[in-house]
Length: 489
Image: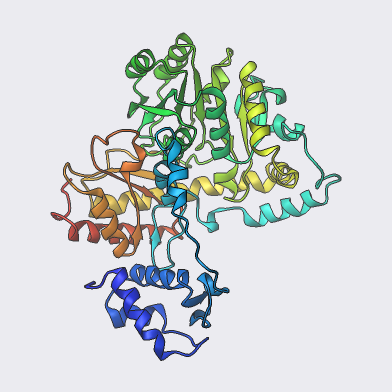
């Protein structure tokens, strides 16, 4: 589609057109605006959002967009006077050298932003609603609300039954962990925050995989830590470089995702598993194991390795396990597993930060994992993720054969695409959005300079396998139109 107008130009045009409408009158539909102004649906959505923010129009989902009443403020509410907030630049700059909160959060916010309906979401970090056990979860929540004491104050560490379930889930049937080794937290991101704030002093280095999940980098930078990258290959973190990084930096913690790492999809090899624990123990350091993909294993994956925590008798590993990805973005219930004085430190920091996880959520989590429907849901999810992965791989092999590596991970929800040297990943991402598909640029996954341009493609947030394939086709067109054509295999 030819697109001569920028978002700013469309906003200005629509702002002039508002004089034609009376207060409360409905504006033309998004489709009509696309045809009239010859712009993409994304541009129209952004322009409408800008007018909503100015208080000039009101957007009512399912009904349309209407001219706001005179004097209305942002979102159509009463106008409020604007004060002078320039003083905040000075106040917030006092620790800018120590904490890069805004820069660290950018990559994280990109995967949490819900795109307009016209855009196919190959960017999001959560499965589509059709892949989640909403009925089972609703029934679990209803039962939880009727439990005696469900609305009372829970134990600070979490409900004993839920901690015991997490201990079995993480440590396995051999009993490597007990309920007393587990804290219940408000989701995996909260667990990572607690772990890094507990184990690493402000200003100190922390080792991270390279590339790695932007949420890890955001947590580290917000805590005033210095992320030190350690490269990852097809077998997981490079343990030869891990030992060198510990020695050179003096770091006392390493954050990793050994199972279907985000974004590469790598699984830490059997040989390197023992090496990671040995190297960290020799350095007097902790391994923070983010086991986010344990419930996102595909139907064709076969047996997967146990968590590092299950093979760690010495308290080297601090393990993070969450229910959120497989259950619901709003079921923010996870666990931190640790041993020794580290557990006491984790508990103290969590109490200061949040007191405890609301008891109704914990009770609902217990009901959910004890429901026969939970196991059925996990089998369905494994099959659906497999189908979506295969749809994405087929479409990429056919349309963008040079971007995907020889294999695709049989777990997680994403593919890591390598662009040719010199290709501008930002330009490709912007062109894709104009074409109606959202993908993630790779830069935010690196703690330092990125060695090459990449894209991350998530196939879990799309509505169907057909939509995944259509999204890849839109990406192919955008890739072709934004550079030197489609790469060869």
